[in-house]
Length: 248
Ligand SMILES: C[S@@+](CC[C@H](N)C(=O)[O-])C[C@H]1O[C@@H](n2cnc3c(N)ncnc32)[C@H](O)[C@@H]1O
Image (tube, rainbow, N blue to C red; front, side):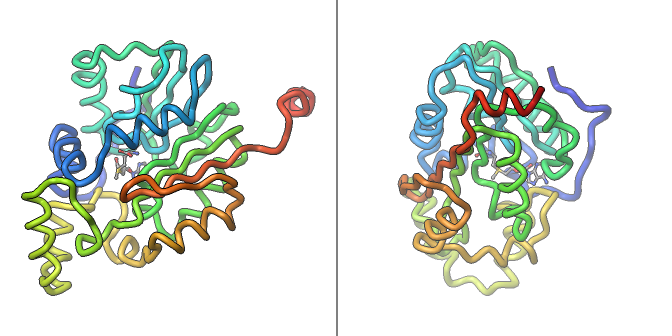
């Protein structure tokens, strides 16, 4: 089920990117993950459909998908993929029509974008891959009938409005830390995914208002706020029968 020639090891990852269990535990305390993925699943709709989750992280989305969906998840984090296979699918009794997991760089498009998907989900990653976020969306547009982006507009510790009281306190005091200490904390414990360096991720400067504008300029016709996240939906204007004729 996990495809890929061999396990690719990336650079040093922070604590939360070393354990899928910890990643889920922390993100659930910071954001409302259930509400987010349930909303995305509703936007995808009921199967049969081919869905690409780019990148899939710990595969949380699968918990909410309709059983007739064929799911493909791509991520470079081998620990997350292993956890999906060994724990998530069994513990949550996830039964989808087909599940394919690939350990690939999401920018190696030729490795996984061979056929058209009904839906591509791009969740919580644009701020990681900055400044290549536009390239990722444009490539997804070539390969999907529908794209659902879900991006938090609060990613820096001082902007996050944590759900959990303990994390609220930690974040409150975190606001007073100098940038040099924040960099170390990011490297060891926070958003350091071992793939995208801090100096690039740090340049992500979208907020509530500018993220909405960005979705609009990228042609996303539906966008709405969901707690600390902004969801955008793009749909291809090419009718299905024309796609089929041009593919012949
Ligand atoms: C914040 S997590 C989001 C995961 C999932 N989409 C979600 O919403 O929970 C970011 C993920 O992006 C993955 N990632 C970042 N850059 C990547 C790249 N170039 N290729 C593949 N995966 C990447 C990391 O491994 C990590 O699992």
